[in-house]
Image (cartoon, rainbow, N blue to C red):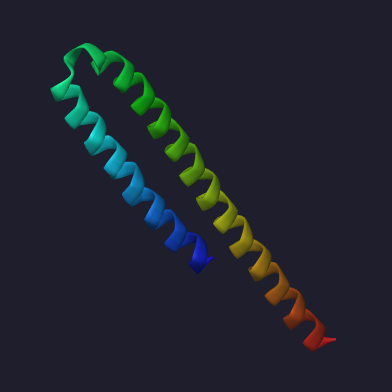
Length: 78
């Protein structure tokens, strides 16, 4: 799980850089602002989807680990 958190943190920095660059380019080239906004919205949506899926997978892994620990304790009792 920890490597995924590191990867997500690195990706989050890249997404922030893309957002900053899109804002900068939008100010420099107002005619391109609409296209940049659409592209940025796509990036933000993809990031939100990825982030949600990773967090859901982390929760599932935690539950699986708890289940295995419980089964281990049950075996000890038998």
